[in-house]
Length: 220
Image 1 (cartoon, rainbow, N blue to C red):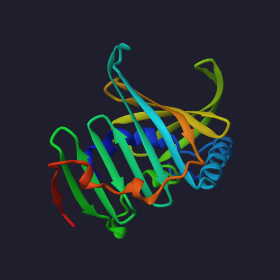
Image 2: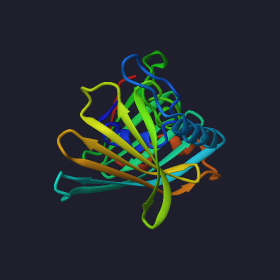
Image 3: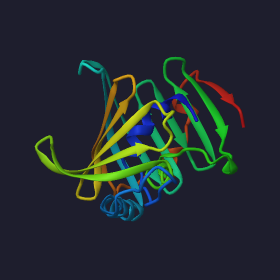
Image 4: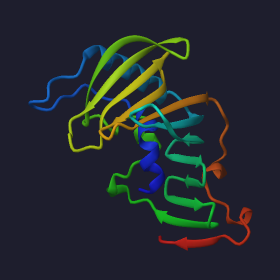
């Protein structure tokens, strides 16, 4: 939908709630992994709102850090807001405002229900339910904590990545690693997740009055 989602997709995959499906000739997904992911699904669907911080670390094949980013995400029903370095995205469920801080410009688009657009809610639910094989690798240590690790392999071998690792703690996926064919590795981590925050509807609407001189590009 926009350039930010290209970088956020793997982070939000970390809460994708995949169903046990397989593609002919590609093998079957792990039933134990399905149980874990189903538990994540049920837990997330019980939240009235979600507020969390996230970080992104990019490394090359040699383990050298190429960059770091951080941001926050807010969700309620079909509404969402994403704040990341240089860009903010707001959606009230009907419209999307993409604000570029460097140019002080906001672009407004109407959501097309028939377009099956990617939203954080879909990525936190079952957007990828037909795209991966997955298996439970067992318990691993991450930042000193025991977590369950699930490995995802895409059916589509033309994708730029060949593997995704999810790290789950108490029914919540706290970290995701995406391994690209180029050797680059993207590590996304979630922190400070709140599921009981009161989020007014105004949270999800761009208020031009707060941005003096903003250029508005209305494409609705």
